[in-house]
Image (cartoon, rainbow, N blue to C red; front, top):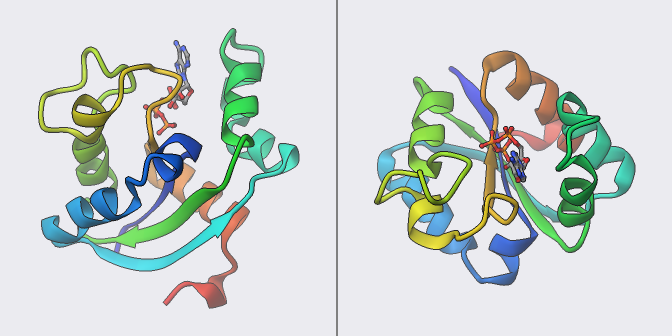
Length: 137
Ligand code: ATP
């Protein structure tokens, strides 16, 4: 079954939206395989966001994702990547469709609450940054 890596970013944790975000994925019928709190260090953040190195928002992005605890998860289901991206909504809260997490709860592109892998390759690259296989049910 397809898997994806989902991470509630420091703003989502701080604003008490973990339950709300998990609930949306659960109600959709997706399966939670693993979840944990952690504080990202710079090395892990760089690994995760390596594709954005050199972009204007790269340094603020690293600073933001390492600014407080995150809640990292692995989810599974048919088309889980496309489905979770649809539930999360577009990167920019202004153009995210109404009813998506980012439209409903986010204001800024750089504080957009939650990350979801955008491809099978990226999901399988990101999951081991956060979880060893024995931590995934
Ligand atoms: P994520 O990877 O976090 O799920 P995404 O796939 O919607 O988000 P990406 O293009 O992968 O978006 O960008 C990763 C993150 O970098 C975004 O979630 C956002 O926090 C930040 N980011 C992306 N584009 C911009 C931008 N133009 N200005 C500021 N921050 C940005």
